[in-house]
Structure formats: structure tokens, C-alpha cells
Length: 196
Image (cartoon, rainbow, N blue to C red; front, side, top):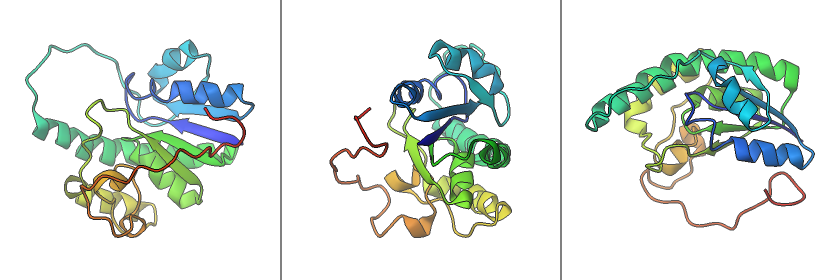
């Protein structure tokens, strides 16, 4: 199976994906990792090569600040669901032509990857990378989500709640009200063979 692992941000975004990518490669699957060019050393530390996509991010240390959720929501809305998503979707659509993945595995903030996977009609899996368990909210992504989807020829909006955190279009999210937790389901091996 051909797997494309993608991430939209700095070092905290690829780290949760890399053990999965490494295990998939060790199981004989074809693996491509794609994200910010400056994260090549992070991928290399896991024994994986990085194919650059989307805007680069410059790692920086900043002073610890009080929590400002409005600022965090603005970053998600304007960067991750805006300029990062637009550039990443375009780059990943082009990368698909070279790697032809069967499944795209993305970090929860890589909305561009979700758009690309939907446009291509391939399976897309989201991995939570935020220690808070995800704070992506549909109401905060309605406008940029609709614009982004329209730019790539898709209708609808990014859905909310736990399923929306996976970047599914609203019409795919089913009837479960936003904010409710998904029922526990047995783990399934989507790769075939041994579990990762």
C-alpha cells in the first residue's frame, strides 16, 4: 500500500505521525512524508525522507505567554485553514501525480491535505497532534472553510465536533451533533497484516 503522511506545522506536527510512518515502512508499505522543508531533520531522525510541501515554517523559541484562546483560534482560522491550507492542497495535488498514494494520513491541522484527498477521492486519516485533544471548532472555520473548499471545486463546509476535526465535509459528518464524543469502536487494521 502507498501511504502519504502529511503535516502543516512545525516540529510538534510531524512527531506523532513519524512512528506510524516508520512502522508502515517497516511493514513493507511505500511511505512518503511531506511537510515544511525545515522539518527535514525531524523526518530524518525517524529514518524517513521528507518531500517539501506548503509554506516553510521557521522554528523559533518564544517566551511563555498566558493562554490566549482567541489568538489560537485566529491562527487556526487564518493560517491553518487559510494560507497554509491553500498552498498545501495545491502542493499535495501535484505530489499525488508523482507518488499516487492509496491513503493520506495527516495531522489534524493539515486542512489542505484533507481538501487534496477529497478532490482525489482517496482515503484520509487524521491524527490528533494537539495535547488538548483538538480545539478545531466548526463555527470558527465556516467562512475560511467554505472559501477554501470552493477554490478547489468542493461544496459544503468543514464539519464541526470530533468528526470536523478530521476535516470531513459537513455532508459526510452524519447526523451526530457537533461536540458529542464518537462512540468507542474496535481498532481496525486499515493497512492489512500486522497492526501498527
